[in-house]
Amino acid sequence: MSVETISRPVIFGEILFDLFPGGVETLGGAPFNVAWNLAMFGMNPLFISRVGDDRRGETALEAMRECGMDTSGVQVDNEKQTGVVEVKMDDSSHTFDILPDQAYDHIEPSDNTMSAIENGSFSLLYHGTLINRSEKSAMALQTVSSKSNIPAFVDVNLRKPWSSGDSARKAVKGARWVKLNNEELDQVMGSCSTDGENLEALAEYFRAETGVELLMVTMGERGAFFVTESRIDRYGPGPATGLIDTVGAGDAFSAVVITGLILRWSPETMLKRAVSFAADVCRIRGGVSADRSIYQRHYKNWGL
Image (cartoon, rainbow, N blue to C red; front, side, top):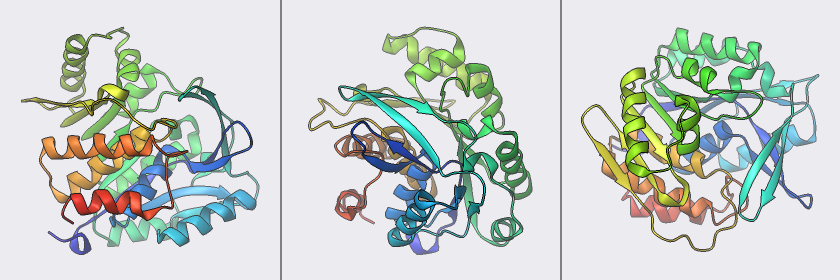
């Protein structure tokens, strides 16, 4: 199966700028990071989002064009500003201060986008849980989902005060694939499982409860594991080297898994390749890079 002939993923959600200490700005937002990585891997995603009619919005669109991304699904808002998030660093770890009422909170189900989806060949619909903080964008997502009937890949992103374990449970309802990290799994389940065996048992319970086909749990430097109805696959990457920050590592993981789902890789292959690429993203500032060599190295190792 060649990349040129496969169906495309639809990525729905926020595009924003991560503002790091010292004035450094990088493009971000989980859905944007996923879409960018998929584009760099030649998967031609349809990215549905919204930016402001401002300097950051134009910078984002220009970066997408230079990357070769399809910008037809990105709307421009004449009133709301392009999203920003203040990133607070503690060594290599980080926390986010997500500002309210940004352009991505006002995504609309445009006729052009819906027509493209209805007349195209699309394999999955990826979105995170943060986009549901806005009634308008949540309704647009529901419209895209219901009219397209594309199976959903939901990325649980618990960001205070915008989401909770209860809201995440609602967001994953009906999803085929779900990804979250170990801390988010604890919050969703109201538990506290630091032990690997207990965490896997908790993940099995959550997968059975939600009925998802594949549950993915990332654990930072400890790697990740997959849970299906019949098996658990585990992979640890070994000691981390050259770590700069972990921003976007989970999104890098999701992008490779989506690539694997579309190209029909085995679960073991998907898991190892996703963990490996996520580790590489931890060696750059921010969640994506314009340096194509990072992507080409993995792409060639995959034999594509």
